[in-house]
Figure 1 (cartoon, rainbow, N blue to C red):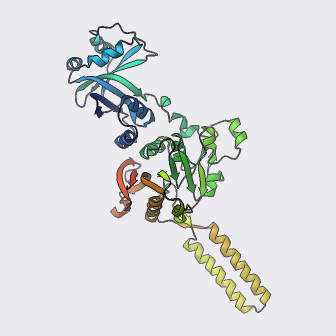
Figure 2: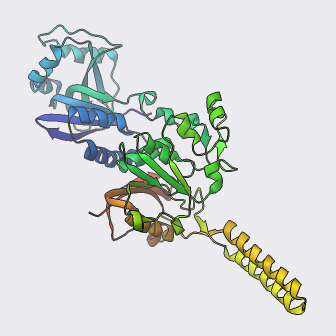
Length: 431
């Protein structure tokens, strides 16, 4: 995890100024403000809520409550809100000072000199560098030459300290060829504003990477997929040999989509084998039931978009066989033979139609996704999905999907190659 960071002033509430110290040099840098706004909309702005936001965020590095700021150390010290600072110091809790100059490396000697500037405080603080209960943060942002001093509310300084570290793909027992990367899956969950008790649906659930991220927040997860094999661990998904768990093997020796949920002791999702082109969920009787729909559609790069049907080439071969059988019937006057041939034709038709798939036009796929979402999502509910763009294609191919029942909230771009990128699109069903 890269920890060089920018500063963004988040909010000012009840005279308190908060900073959000983002992770920089990070492939999801374009996602930071959209994620922050989504989480803030859930929790609101206060010291306690900002702590929760920091712990649930993928992008926040540190989150200090500001006691003073200025264009120099001297002006920062002059502008200190001493009433709030003294209230903390009076508690006599072990503390430490953390000094950071953004965009510049300074020596330990320089850090000590900065800390000693606070020697005028009328208290004898108990310094504990290893296990402090209070961390004071001194920051200089070299981009605007501002100095900040405040109380560190929360920090995701080391990746191993983050809540999502344990879900890393390399530590999961069941993987698929297109399993969504951990941080991206949690970013999608935060964009969908998933919280405890929400009903969440992933219509392209695959091996369940996005569903796993959503389930971390104690939602009630539903999922569906056309590929029976990946759900049941047959041929497509695979066991991660780097993860050893004898208890897991005894509970579920056949590794499948539920394996990861059992491993992390999360509630199992409700899973259907279903084609999004022919949705089996009856929304006419139940009405909208989901608070959010979060998914990664197969847009044809890592996984081909398909639906139940017969491809043109296989359809032609099938028709040729049927016509050949019919011609043979006309030449054969044996009624018993004709009846037998008719039965064989019916069996071939039933078997080949069910097991075959045809190409699913990507534009039609997204249209169907939004159309179904307009019936399944509650009003105000969010749909979050990945959309692939390619600048080498005509402009109309890169146009974001639209639907009259949805309003566009935001998009975040993750560049893949010089021409290709994936956009994380967030939309809300109109009230």
